[in-house]
Image (tube, rainbow, N blue to C red; front, side, top):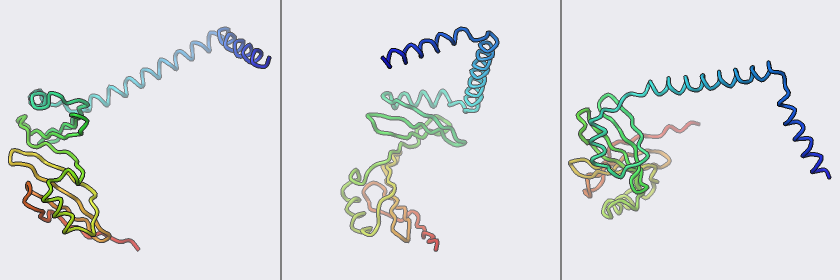
Length: 177
């Protein structure tokens, strides 16, 4: 019985909305229209600020990464970066202003490193943890950069292929007391 009364009350309230004064309905329509116009204007103003990506860069990208999806572009002064997915891997491709591919990078886990440099990393940095690791492929070959940390230092190491690790940068952490 309660359900029927509650439903009838709801139907009565909804049907009563049709009989509101015309002035209120017009005001609601105006507010809705104004809101749509403002949202549209804001969206187009942000879209206009995005720099155009060179057609040559896009063509070069499409030739080399035909299976790419979810592509996001970023243009800088000296290069253009494309972030995209291939086979569920997130990759980054960098192109110079002549639409030539400079490098392709991807984040990797330590177990994706070549065995020789993984062993070297584990042997020489036992008191550190890996906070960042990525692979860079260029025309000169494959390089790896790893950031290892302990309580006192942040160290970035670089490996050209499988030749071992060299210190690229080392920073002492500031301990706030």
